[in-house]
Length: 489
Image (cartoon, rainbow, N blue to C red):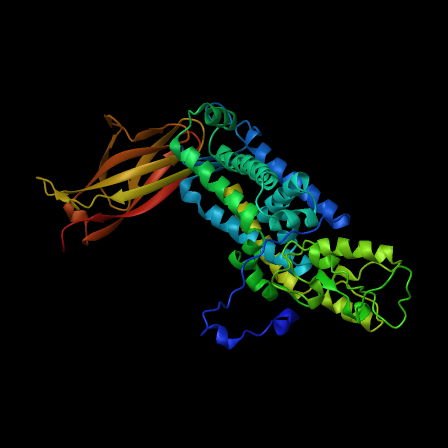
């Protein structure tokens, strides 16, 4: 499906003399003031905004019992402890691949949503949309609807204008600060962090994070607004690759609306289109596009133009749906007098859905079957080996035992691969005479291990050597492979 906008064909020509006469090829950015509308989609957007904002600020205060000594915050990124917690999951630094998998699933899910329902994410769920809606609500409450806001912008500076602008920006700053504070609460015990923020006891890094996140919220939602969607967000650039003729998008029924022309109340619509050219769909659009020109990069799929147009259709006793959320295939079918068909299941959606299920299933299986013990062995490089007085060869290793259980565990260490090899273990502040290694709960035990092998048992300069860790009582084993270095043969 070709989703390129027909608006590009209507782009005004640029006078080539501008370049030589000191003119500019770029128009000055004009603040867009959308008109408020009422309707089903506007109601859905209010609900989405409320739910997302409540979740953003309340989620850090949710508790989850993980046992003694463990943080009880349900969602927590513990930078100091190098852990990530989400409900019953505890993610360690070396398991960052789970985050990679989650981001991949999120991306493919976005593709699936787009192929089914267009830019529903942008119009209802994106944080830029949510905070922009909230900031615009503040403007309407302080100044009024579209006409009053535009008049205030055009008016010369006065005490009234300065006061209203100051009130708006002050409220925006409070909202932005709340956004930044909400972000920092995910990185520490939320009640404690919140208390320390307001008492001035938090670190400079925390206040810096609040300033950065809150500052971005203030600038992007308060002043950049649609410029973020049009120029900064890459999603609008490649949306056409995820859509086809059966994707449900915000569309204009041109077969029904054209030819458009103004109409008085009660006038007959015989021999003309239903579009009365009131431009309500344009003034309701948060990015300022005209949906009647077709699908465009600037359309974020918020569907407010549908609510605006339906209100006009009701006033003129015309059927709703001149601007509607439907597929291009169904629009063409209705134009030809055929019955529309909704094809949610098609090759594109099957592929996206299958990828989500497969990758999500692999992540779930990996989490369910992951081991609670890991062993990493690092060979000492200086020196690679030492020849003892009796001719035997000794190698040094650093063995790290990761205990991912919140209980102290005892392991028995063994080496395999070289007949007659012996070893000694040094760990913590004292020598460990036996091969039993005691690892603290939810911690990493680090030990220096010296392996000694008879010279006659080494057939090459590099001999495979395995470290086997066997848990006391349960008998579960964890194995790590390494090499034993010796003189050249």
